[in-house]
Amino acid sequence: MNKEKLNLWHQEEQYGITGWDFSHLDGRWQNELLSWNYRKLVLSYLKSDMQLLDMGTGGGELLKTFHHPSNRTQVTEAWQPNINLLKHTIAKQGIKVHALSAKYEDALPVKNGSLNMITNSHAAFNPKLIKDKLKTGGYFISQQVGALNNYSLSRFFNSAYVPAYPDNTLLKTVADFQNFGFEILLAKEAQPSMTFFDIGAIIYYASIIPWEFPDFSVDHCLSQLTQLDQLIQNGGSVNTKEDRFILVTRKM
Image (cartoon, rainbow, N blue to C red; front, side, top):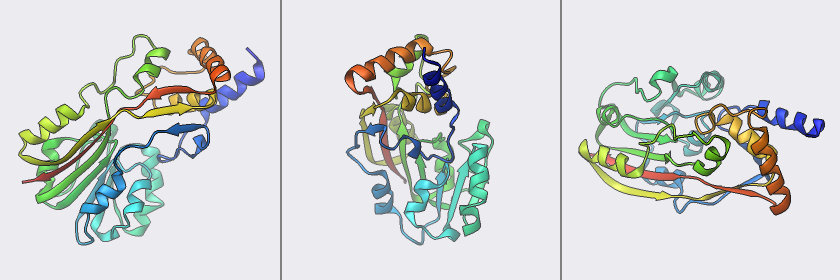
């Protein structure tokens, strides 16, 4: 292994992420578009007088695109670096930030029946809590990463890998909300392609998604990374499959 190349690989592994910003991968990967647009779906239901809570808001990147009044907006977040970021950004704009512990990332520390809409992009949730916190007629809109996201790539690095959230499927989620009396307005799933154009991009991605790539490190996975690097040199890219689903529900 070339020492200079190995140093570059270690740099990718240590680069890290702020908020939920993947700009480090610009031009280095490609994500197949979904048949739906989460932001547009949210905006089709969201009215300016609604009380909104965004679960697991990350760095607030998606939330900001909703342009909802700050005094009617709340968020939850459980990752401390993101909490620190939010305190210096959206919190100063008047948005209430509920800092959670990682153990209770699906918590909703607000009054029962106080919300018109709960949005959730790729965060954990509890249907019973959502029912409690929504007003009658309130909406829960969520785009989720399904159980089999990047399964083939995860298994390539670790033959013993099993999905961290095996029950996070559209079928089970729809059934759970129906059991709590919700009306299902939209339920769709997709398995779009994700393409990486250089090995450093794969290293960076795997290093910041530890639940899909447990125990990943350059040194530990050097053999597999060398194989992938050769595949990219020969074919120009490596492909994997994402697992996504969207759910729009209304409390009856």
